[in-house]
Length: 255
Image (cartoon, rainbow, N blue to C red; front, side, top):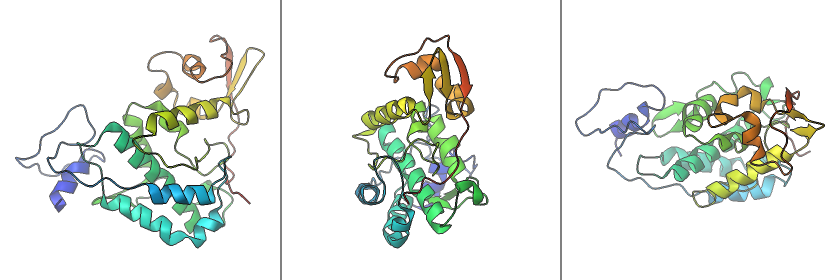
């Protein structure tokens, strides 16, 4: 794909407005323009291998290990950069691409600033534009808010990791189009039932602040507790009082 192909492809994602060509057809129901050129889909195997190697089952991350294996991490991120999504990709392929990119880039951000006590100690950690997708340079913020949150899949909030203890756990399995729905359900169920992140007792729901910050994403088709009850092992009365737990931004370091 040439320069204009990539530029047109990602313009709508990041509010760019390049001059249109006669061969460009827009899909009003998609974030990505329809371009009649198929691109190779990335292989997420190397990311899966890194996750198996450096992330435990509790989501604790061996950042020192990642630091010694930085070339493998950078190679995977570069591969994603060189194989950006097109409109012919399925929703599951796009979700796998951007969830894995977000998580891998977050690990890279921490490794580049390691040791650190918290991602919040890193200046412009979410707004800095340093991640490339084709010919676009973007940020973690843009990937989360301008792409993933607009894909009508609120479970993404349980799949992307912000390198902190109160975040949903970083899975030690890479997302793929094939495992997408099952892994999203696993992450949702795991997060909702994790008493370190959400607590339900005596008619009270003490929730992660993720449910406060992104409430609108979870309540398009009902109340917040209705959404949570889909994944809660012991559903709570939907009239239960709701409060929000403090958020622990300390680094999810394995050491």
